[in-house]
Structure formats: structure tokens, C-alpha cells
Length: 196
View (cartoon, one colour):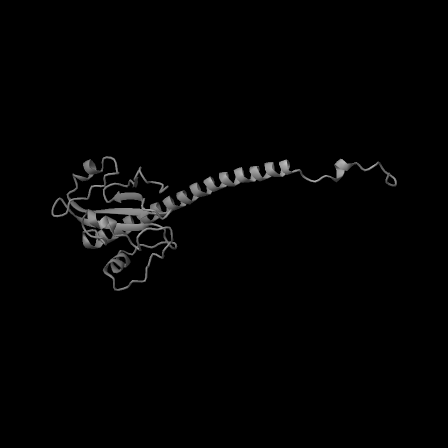
């Protein structure tokens, strides 16, 4: 017996059992999995916010350009094939500076003339095509946007279409977003809208 106290039992000297440690490890694993899902959702939401901000900036820059020149500026061409000519670079899982440093390159110089600004590096690639409808350049059809063709068949005059593409997991499935001078809507490709 110890001095001035009760006898010491062996149960007071025990540590954690293996079963108790395994339960704690399993609980930590479940919490980590839940946190990872939440983190991915947060990152996808942040990427969608980037697209909304940049497309809005492109729309404002195009309207300013039209106010001066009576036409829109198509930095990626004037037909649907230009909607896959991404600026500042083809989409992948890395961020890139908006001014890609390629002064003298026609596409770079066009985007600099359009004067779209960003808060920092961007994760998505952007393309903008422009023309004058109905001839010689009809508005490109964006097949993943509902009622796009119906809404854009009636354009008679200058137009632009902007498309954004992201590839957050660096595979060949792009998140696609599109908007035009006719609508304030930003449509999302339902097949790969979240790039997962």
C-alpha cells in the first residue's frame, strides 16, 4: 500500500488498447474524407466564381470596344473553330498569368487591346469570337446551352460569343461555360460542368 492513500490497482496503469486506437484512427479517416469532399466542392465553386468574374470583364470590355468602333473584337476568330483557341493557355490543372508575356503574338496583343483585367493568375482558358450577323458570320451554335440557336438566329448586327474552359483534374474532360452579347446568361455544359 502507498503512503497516505489507497492501493494502486493495475487498471490505473493501463494505456490505450489496440481496439481503442483503431477506433480513433477510423474516426480520423472518416473526418478526413468528409473534409476532402468539402474542400473539392469549395475549389470548384471558386473556379466557377473566376469564370463569372472574367466573363463579366470580357463582356464589359467588348461593350466598351463596340462603343468606340461599332463592332466587337474577336481575339480567337470569327467562327466556332475559334472557340477552342484558349487564352492565356490551353486549360490544365495549373494557374497562369493573364498577361502570358507573348507580346508580338497576335492573340496576346488582341487580348491586351481588349483590356480585360484580372485580380491574379487564372485557372481557365478563355476564347472570344465576334462577327456581324447574319452575313458573313452567323453566330456559332453552342450545343450545350438550351435554346441557344433559337435565341441567336434573330441577331442582325454585331455579336460576340465567349467560352471558358477549365481542366482542374488535368484529364481531357473540360468544364465549359459560354455567354454571348445577346444574353446576360452564363450557361454551363451539363456533361462536364464541374470537371469531375
